[in-house]
Image (cartoon, rainbow, N blue to C red; front, side, top):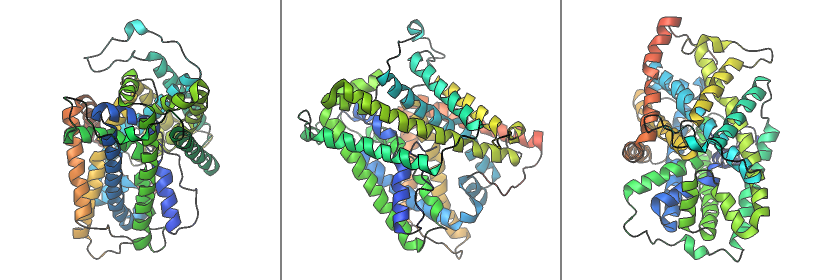
Length: 475
């Protein structure tokens, strides 16, 4: 699901530095290149955009600390899918696994491929195609031919990377580390050269003046944070470290806090640079265009077209690597669910490269379909809406497990219990409610796709018999 560079093996020491590095590495991702544009469009004020980034980081911190307790207590059972079997029941666990397939992981793949496509076109412009059909729609909801050239490139990326993965060409630790350092390089270049350029006006970044007749409301802030959370995705990995970290009670919270604040500072620096170089109206235009990247437009201000080529290539390479890693990792839960009789049995088979190729192709085809269902921002909003349902359920598990297993050994207990997890749960409820009201298309599609899991659960049980447990739980 994460759009950040995969980093599970970037470091070996299991101390405080390990937690900090993994926290930062798993959160940083492609969202920082694009998401300032929809946030500026929603809030209309540079200062409030930065506030949304800070609030998004703090809520991320609360969620990560809460998940760390659950993961530390249930570390032996595997990832989220297995946690839900332990906390709730197999049906809730299945609904999570189904959500990964129909929305969370596949729409993440689709969204990442969009960024790959747009960065590619910034280097090699591709003529618009089927423009006469751009307004064609299905029920006034889906516009499959809008920005058709970008979608065709995105689909091609998904299919090619899926093919590579079926040949067991997977992202190793070396590639993961290289991708992460290229992300650092790209963001560092934008900040250093952007803020020192004559074109930058840093005072504009902290202007809290709002657009006349368009005040910043709680609802608008929730909507803006929906965009910010795409850039903060990846923090759930932190929760899986509970059983591996020395002195977990001290090092997990300290590492998560330090790591999250490092990311907040990085995002504030980068987005302050965007806002100093490109006025809010310009970012609104970027958002309206749907096929532009805010980072590219910012670099264009101080480096011109040559800078556009450089930063676009950097974004292309890093996002292509992240897409590749996401495709490889995302098929595993479906494969493991099939082994439990809770998914199509045909995908249990592995090919001569010892890869579940059918699981990869089903995932890839559905990801391609999702590409045609919406724009980059619509897809990412759908992902965030869907996954926050389960983030809330996992955090609720902190309370359930405290009552059900009060004496069980916990490597880490969440700071500020019960306030911190309670705040996070309330925020999840608020985010979901606001998205249903302000983004009914994205929330509605996400809900409909999630609810298809209800009949599918009973279909699989009827067709394949009672579920069975396997040691290889999807994580």
